[in-house]
Image (cartoon, rainbow over all chains, first blue to last red; front, side, top):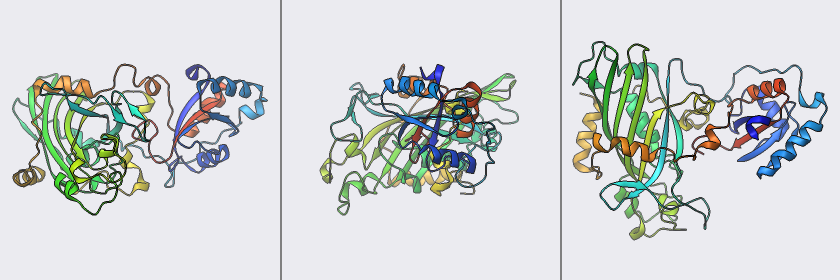
Length: 324
Length: 81
């Protein structure tokens, strides 16, 4: 229904676009953590809460005169100002990062967590959902993985800026908890890259590493000043990484950029994973397992047109971590 | 030596990462297990979401279609909200 009859678009309300886009969006009234149907002129058709609303919106649209449906001309506006969504720098690589809650599988390995709490008491999701983020890798950073004369066993320095970006912005369970300010502190971290195989056609690279962000678990566990489990600022996470990258020397691009990580996060998660409301007693505070899977973004607009949470300028975060 | 690696070695003595290393043997299965479940991302991947309002207006006017907007308050609506 949506694919055939609507044009679908997302909007982040803090950065909806340039001045022309903002003016039009304000005219519609905006969509606030939900769906609305509108015309290209900015006339709101209604809120979309249920699938059956779509047909009603479509019928209402078709009853409108052409002048209401199709403005002529349409000004796109100029991309200036702080409310324009971020774009990747030229030549950057886009990687999608999936995150989900894990638990032990009883056989020494990991499995997707069987049950987690959605925001709201009484909601439960089973099994754990897969959340996603985007990672941008600058051109000079990904080029660092491709030596001039690659040979098996060769060690490659992983750019410090990329390591820090991965650890601080993705190295924790970002799916179910706010965890927005874990990125402020990197306790330790390191990632190494080794050429596993080098042929005239391709270079395959193995990545290995670990990271520790936020506060140590003991700081969270032993805190006596935080009054609620959900909003305690003592957050932290440890993670282990392993990845395989493959660079096609003929096409001069990566055709594989896969990294897996398994980690433990703490703080806030006692609410979402442990389903405990209110202050969480120190004895109930625990580490929660999570997993990350990095892979090349697809050509879908959702991947190519999106942006990393940390790259939005209004947040004031140092997403690129240069010179650190 | 890579500066971050040095810091990692130093810190490891005081605050070790408890988790076992992730190895090549577990890598493929672990990566697959964490990736989206079958059909889980149909809403995101099967609908051709645009990410700029101006682009959506142009397309809607050209094709004489209404626009459906998914709005989020402070994060990319198709990502980490």
